[in-house]
Amino acid sequence: MKLTLRIWRQKNGQSQGKFENYEVDANVHMSFLEMLDVLNQQLIESGRDPVAFEHDCREGICGACGVVIDGRPHGLLKGTTTCQLHMRFFKDGETVTIEPFRADSFPVIKDLVVDRSAFDRIIQSGGFISVNTGQAQDGNAIPVEKEKAGKAFDAAACIGCGACVAACPNASAMLFVSAKVAHLHLLPQGEIEDETRVANMVRQMDKEGFGNCSNVYACEAECPKEISVENIALMNRRYIKSALTNNK
Image 1: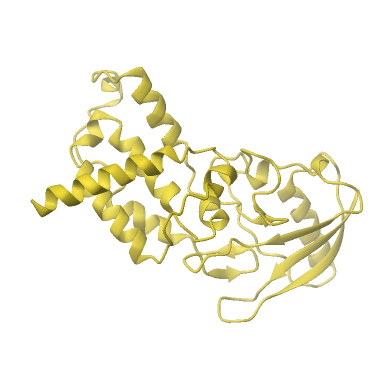
Image 2: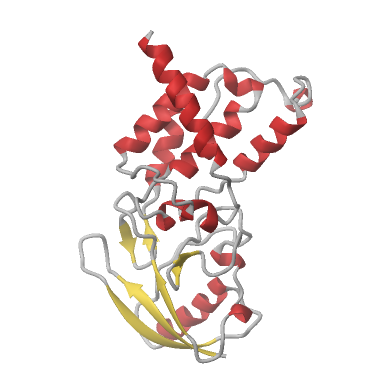
């Protein structure tokens, strides 16, 4: 199948970027990233600069491969990362627009690569527990209710790709932060530092310049792991309780 790729090219964060068109022959069995590999091989062989894009595991679990495809983070399929998107879902002769995640807190490094270190700093501000949880064999020593364990596991499925930020008109990171808050809050090991954790992470989120949630729900719709916005409501409740407790 032949495709026209309309790709955002930008040398660095200081230069002005623009869209450039490329023609590529793709196999329907290729993944989206494999198709970009084919394009880059063509560019290298012709002496041109290849397109910079992020990738790592190519198994949908690392969160590195995020790009906006035809206006949607990770592309047209629900619950799918860019590396899991295959070319059979595109049509021969189609024009595909590929651009980086757009958010002030995700500055462009080069082409389709953005700096998502803001997420790392949010995690470092409190997305952990510091109590002794024992060794591997002690994993079942503390009983956890099945419903809570299931919700904690669902929240922990967040891969930190940033699709929620790219999809939100406010560039809000609340789905990401709430997933990290929720999966630790719902487990007994995480309850001890719950109030300080949520306060620190929300404070860091605001410091990084992310917008506020206005209940558009685009984050949930575009999340490749289908993280629920219920986590945002949980985080808001925990944050309000933390603020009231600290004021007292």
